[in-house]
Structure formats: C-alpha cells, structure tokens
Length: 340
Ligand SMILES: [Zn+2]
Figure (tube, rainbow, N blue to C red):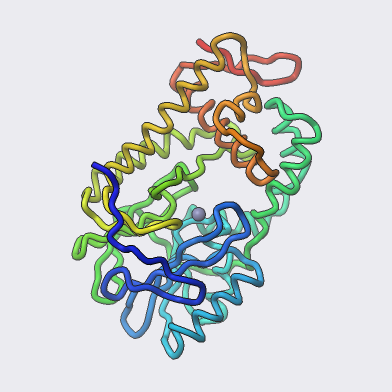
C-alpha cells in the first residue's frame, strides 16, 4: 500500500481550495527551506473557523489580507483554532484574534508555550543555550551561531491574546454541522491538537503526520532529558488506533493524502532506522550528540537547520538512553554517548 493523493491541485497565493464540503485549504509562505504552511477554513455556524495562522512577519500578514480581501471577502469568522505553538502555526494568532475579534482555541500546552515564547525572553537567552550545545560537542562558533540565528524563528510570533478556550484530548468539538473528536499528541510539540470528523472521515493531523517529511522531534535546553521521540511513537500508535486508514488526512504542510496507517508506520520505521545508525556510529568509540548530526543529516546545514538537526539527534539519543541501548559518559566536560 502506498499513499494516495485525491486532490491534485495546490492553492496558489491568495487562493483557497475546497478539499471537502465546507473545508477550504490555503497555503502561506515561510522563509525557510520548508517554504509553506497550510491553513484551513472550516464552515461554522454564522461564518468560518480558521485553523492555524502562519508565521508572524509582514509578508504573511499581507497574505492574510489578500485572503480576507479575496476569496474570503465579506465572510464572518467565528474562532481561531491553533494546532501547536510553533511559530509557523501560532505566529499570527494574537494578530488574527485581535483583527477579527475572535477567540483562540488550543491546548493548554500550546497556549502556555506560546506565552512562554512571548513573555519569558530568558527561555531564548543566548548563554544557557550556548553552554548546552557546547556540552554536547558543538564548537564555540557553532553553538554561538545556533543559539542566536538558529533560534531566531522562535521570535516570529505576535503578542498572545490574554485568554483562550482549552481543547483537550477526548473532547468533542462542534464546528458548524460537524462534530470533531479532539486528539492531542506529544513529540513534535507539547499537546499538539488534531481533529477527526467521523461523519466524513476527515483528519486534520497538524504536523504529527505529514506526507514526504518527518516532523521534527526536538530536545531543547529547557528540558535536556526530555524523551519526545518516545512520546511521538506513542502518539502515532494512538492515532492509528483512533483514526481509520482511509481517512482523508489534512496536514500542516504538504498535500492532503490517504493512507494514514501506512504513513504512521513509515514514520515509525524511519526513526527505528535512525536509532540503528546511531548505534552503529557509537560502536567504535563514544560520540557526542554533535558527532551524530552528520550521521543523520547529509549536506550543508544553515544555523536554523543545524538547530533542528542537533535537537533531533539529541531526541534519538535520549530515547535510546531510556531504552538502555546507550548511556551518557563524561569526557573532558563533554557528554558522550557510549553503546551499552
Ligand atoms: Zn509546522
């Protein structure tokens, strides 16, 4: 079984595309190699609910204006649902809620992380991150670059609204004539929100399951012993058990697709293969997390990509330490991974 793509066109800038009755898809540009994020309009009582908001920069706000003046002109908007706190999804949340006079609905994990990014600049301070990267084997120049330029995208957010409505795992969310089951999953972000509509077998998967790309699984300096890969694999299992294989999957990036269970299996297998590569790399001599970056990622990485690649390598390391396949040892102030 391979994935299939029932929708063959992609909405251009300032356009929407109906992907199911009363569900419109639009794409907003991103200033990264992953060059777009998907947002959706879901028909609601008396208007449209919006799902996700794009990164906060002048170009994206102009793109929103083009949608509001173009295909969505004259429409009412009822609420903004945000899947998770990464700036490509939550960036314009405050701006859109204010502009349209609508309520933000998201998980507690997403809202609190949004507040943290916006209101606790210490979370992004340069020094603790530099020490963290250096302890895991990065050069002084590399850790400086990654803790400044590499984390700059985390600041691409608007001022959060003061209040929100919480979405929780297991609750039923009515949007217009549809009833959605709310699922939340960890691993890519804390308590990422996904919505499943059994009535038309439609799954808004956010970044948890995407065609073509594997969502970034990261460990940051704020929680160095986190095991997001373990959380992510558990979430894939939960999605598989809750949503049928033949659901139409609408993700946060790339195309709508069918073949959800197949894709969950591919993503899980991808991480198993990466763990095997790490185990082989650590077989000869202990390796730092930074030594593992080229084992997992080929080609030249910019500062932003290096921050993702490093954090992803550490996520695999923490997972394998928890599994008992690797252990941490200290060598000249550096944390190294040794095969057990
Ligand atoms: Zn994303």
